Length: 331
Image 1: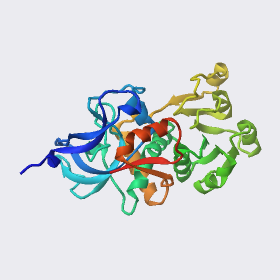
Image 2: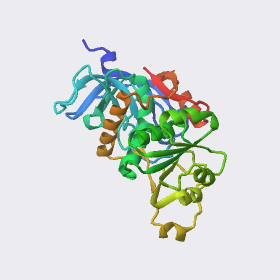
Image 3: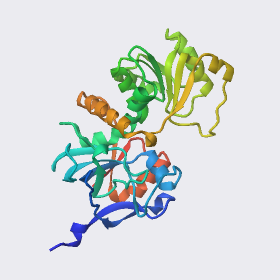
Image 4: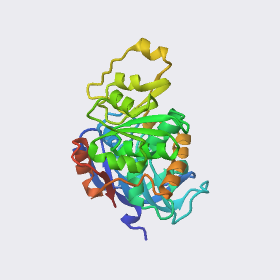
């Protein structure tokens, strides 16, 4: 006999974009998988700022309602499609690219994930720490490898380096052999040292001045994770042919800089958001992340655990910057 529990699942979803109060906790049909899909029983889901952008309608993307929120999840494989050969029932797996561009999210008891967007959880890596890191870590990995095409020996400036993305940029750049310069609060200097920063600068003081004092004439890449550094300052510290990676913008959404000085030094500015990453980029990043996590890197986030029922509160807290750690919804 088939009972309701076999056909339905608990989920956090919306019927229209808007405020966090639009998030509904209720029953939805359990997803069916296609030939190239994997059904996972979800253990935990990370909550990212981009999730609030999708939910609110601030990041336009294809959605079908009711729409399950959330893009990053860890879980156990329950069923595999006929074309799937990388996974079997019982495997532990993670994904970080659901919940946008026409794909349903993963804040639900079960989720159907395309095999190409699913990756194995390395042995002995904590699934909750993993799901907390894979969005920011993949952002850092793709930015360094696919956008910058950075090479060992080059120098990178990471501003706001103590934040979620900043710490991942520092660790990945360090393990790739880059010379890492960071800006942060003095209270985080020891952390930056542990993560591999070669020069630790105080974010409240002049960056060009401190850089000169450190004996580093300039950097090849600069990333401001805070949105609080003047673009002109970062352009000025770039070596010839250097590049700025924009992953955020200041609140006033405006920058000014000396265009002639910029183009005659062959400098560049590139914007990047994870939502536009290709499957190949996500796959390359996943392989790197799994290797680094096995080695003990990238798993440093302070977790704030909430049950799925509190998904709306999690979105409220994130939008108000009312929580310092990484919110993880557990099922």
